[in-house]
Image 1 (cartoon, rainbow, N blue to C red):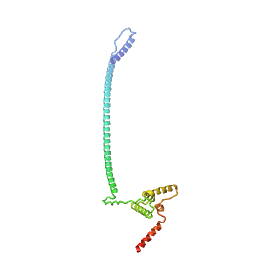
Image 2 (image 1 turned 120 degrees about the vertical axis):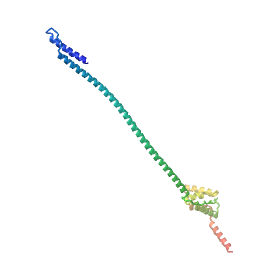
Image 3 (image 1 turned 135 degrees about the horizontal axis):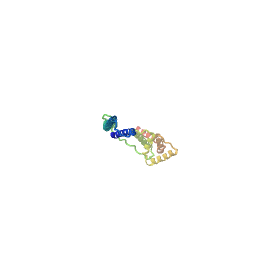
Image 4 (image 1 turned 45 degrees about the vertical axis):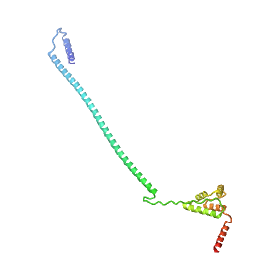
Length: 243
């Protein structure tokens, strides 16, 4: 680069000298001042070349330093990200452990509550939390059936037995009494009851209470002179007792 500029300067000076001396027709040597100037230019150019080379070296070195710095920065960022990830995963594991302990505690409380509930159920079924003697169950005899005998005493005994049975088992509802009484009717009495039910459905008869049932049964199966017969028997018993 320095050589080319010097050659250009020398060529330019030579051309100027030659042009200035053409009229004289002779060639003279170059001026010493020109030589001195050319030497200074050469030195200056060499200095510039050295500075350019130094700048190029500095740029290359700076580029390398920047590249190394970017590489270190990337590695540092990766390390920071990995550290953040590790910290996050550790916190997740801690929260999961706390949550699991809470679940286990709730499950234990639930099991205890189930045990308490089972004890309460046993206490309710037993009737008390203390030991008690259960009352003995009494077998209540069922009333005798009625086949439809036209006898006032048989009818009265049948109805009296039903009432005793209802009191013993706790039947108090009128409809339940009528249905239960009908279960003990057989033969002629059962046929009679079937006809009375048809009459109730048609609306020609009404049997809504147990007293209604007793009245209908007596009208059907008690003789018309049953009351007179009963009074006669009573008089005969009194007569025999006075003898």
